[in-house]
Length: 133
Picture 1: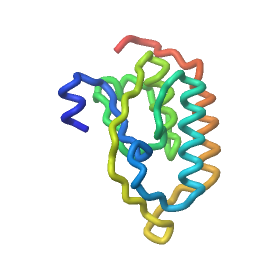
Picture 2: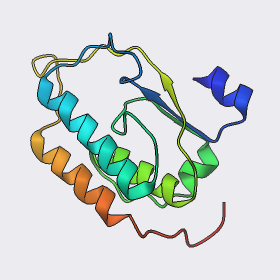
Picture 3: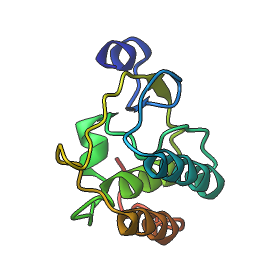
Picture 4: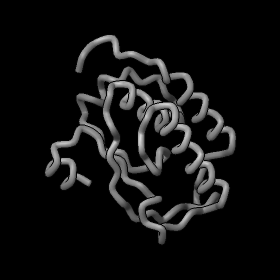
């Protein structure tokens, strides 16, 4: 990811589990939830991303620091995505390899975190940055 960011002078790059169909998922509900969040993101923010709740987000530190983040839990992903999109960035993706943990191995996300992600995406649809980057 770093090579692509440097080579193409990108300020943001997401790693996508969906660009490689051989990636595993821990449960069908997590797969479908991620697809739904990506679709909602694309509709609300005119993006073309395949994996909004990805664990791989590479963001220039100045850009990330300028987002005035309020998140405290799993809403980090949708808040960052929403605010970056509202600043006018199209979020590029690169294929990643992904090896999910099971709940037994420590996966903590629950169905209500998906609902919180949706409400977070909706909440920031009209967000405007108060200062320039």
